[in-house]
Length: 396
Image (cartoon, rainbow, N blue to C red):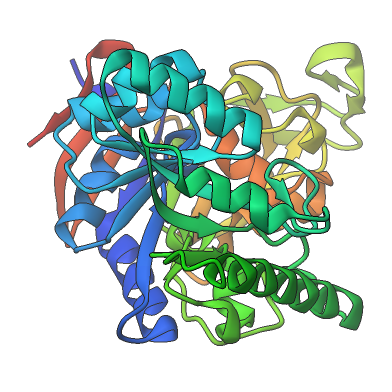
């Protein structure tokens, strides 16, 4: 069966992914490690194939959100160190150790409980200690009196191996003075706490603080390792800073499923929110909000047909939507429509879509539906196909 029979698909350029990784390495310089963040299915691009590519390229770590994400990578053959950034129940200590996974520890209670479960299982668990310097999400509170003693106590727990210490920036993507100063404040807090722990005689083996925005805009914060995610997908979270030459990794396309003529005064799609003001030619596209295209783009979004923009008209449906192609000659069933990407001189990316819909482009990227097959390309060749509905990843 042709996997494109559903009418829409995503293409992921492994060449662009490698270009973006090389840009990270260029910005950070020799000696700074890279943790490729592949949580949320590599921001919707498919974590298995992307992670294999990063491992082949020599990234020192992969970063995921959950134990299940980490185990999926191990089952697919990834051997590179993996850091789980979010919570894992302490009772999974044996699973963490047996699969050579590194767990984030966020509090004294978390550390003590994980150590106890590891002792019961007769294992030792690799950990990174998270310090909260201003995000106020998780982590040892950098402002708390005696926080250095709390962190030092973790080093004394016999069934935990401290392999790194890190923080997370809350405002590194804000280019104004307040955002810059708050990021620098977070960095100062982090370094001060780390230095107080070092004063007890402990070695902090791997310090890291930078997400993509920090990697682009705060070279002084690169430390021992950076954690790019959005950069690797090809989007610069600090658009005013042009230090990084990034290339979007994915394009999304679909085929016209029907073309019809309608008269002036006719309603289009659910609830008749759009009424044609003139005789029109409209094209139906087999892609909707179940594929990640936001309903907020009803009568607001646009796509590219035959090298020209075509406006979305009427409500975006779960599986389909309609475009006004009156001004584009010769549109026929089967024509390829560019949802995300470039056709000729015009292009649409997730930032454009976010600006129009009022939805963060971070969110839109990770929304890309699992109904669409994903084609992975290297050069002009398709090297793998990911189809969640018919068997998962197939390397060609």
